[in-house]
Image 1 (spheres, helix red, strand yellow):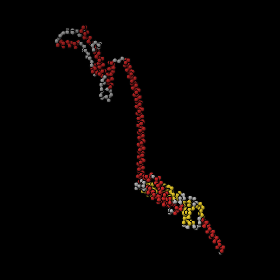
Image 2 (cartoon, rainbow, N blue to C red):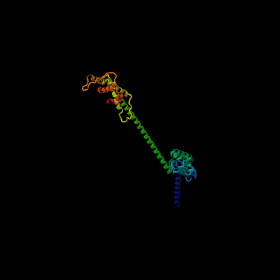
Image 3 (cartoon, rainbow, N blue to C red):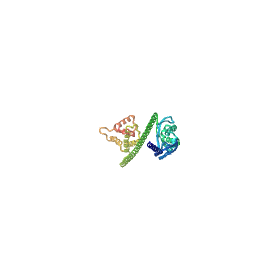
Image 4 (cartoon, helix red, strand yellow):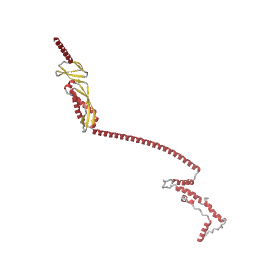
Length: 364
């Protein structure tokens, strides 16, 4: 019995020593810290590595992760300044800087951070309208980080960043915003299309202007060349007329021949007689008058010689009538003399006036 008892005692002592050695040796992982209490009171904080504890007296209260943590939070309802309801969810990046304070100053710092972000976010977004809330995420993130960092400092926690992941308005507001965006896009498309049409019209007008300028220059050059050609033709005609020594009678006759051509055309309703017409007619009338004046060798002189010859020699088949002697005579004798003159003398041609020539009296 003594041997068995001795063996049991030895085993108990070995097991006790092994247990105490196991409890006294503690390996702390990297980027972690352990809060040690001795008889229920904070004793120290163990750093990463091999550490020794007093068995039974020292206990590990908490193991704290010293790395930066990322915690997402569920969406929260937030009302904007213009009384619109939006749902916002966010992500908080934090890091424990003091394990002792994180263990003793706050019971659950993750939940505390969630509530703190929720209340702070309601205060910040409540002072903004919806449009500013949607377009000012950086401003909201900065305000949240500053508010959380000042509040979590006594807890031994540093908030590095707060990011708003989603800002989702309710369904009605979303549909209204989609309509607004669609209308804005249609407006921009209309403006761009109008600008395109405007530029096209400007380019087309510029092209038309350049085309008209070039066409006008071409027509001006052609008219200049045509005028030069006509001037040369008139010059040659003028030289030919002077070389042919044309008199005023020919020129007046040519002028009268050109007058009917002035009235040609269906659009001519009123024809104004040129002032030079009287001079041309007078010229032609003067030419005809010279032909009928006695002593100029015209037909009048030739016809006047016929009665004299008839009186002297007599015409065949007709008896010669003696001319009555000069002196006073009775009315009956005068009438008989006039009848005899009509029967024996050739009628004297009358002098044509310019009006007779113009209206065709010479044809009669």
